[in-house]
Length: 100
Image (cartoon, rainbow, N blue to C red):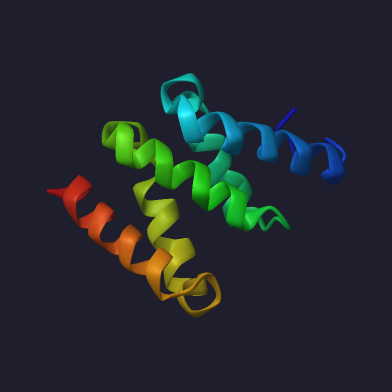
C-alpha cells in the first residue's frame, strides 16, 4: 500500500494506521521505517503522522531507524523550522545517539 503508484489518499490512510499502531506496538511496524522515511523524503501531507510513527519506533527500537538515519538527517536539514523545534531537537538527539 505504501508505494508511490498508490492513490495518495490511500497512502495517507495507511500512514495513519501505521502511526496509530506505532503508538502502542512499535515492534509491529518497525519494518515500515525505511518506507516511511522514503515517503517523508518524497513529500506527504501525512508528514506529521510519519514523524510520530518514526519517533515512536526510534524510542522503542533505535536500531530500526539506523538504516534511514541519512534520509532523516537530510529531511531535518530541509524542514527543521517547518516541523517545529521540539520534533527537531528529538531527532537531532536521537540521530546523534544512533550514529555513536
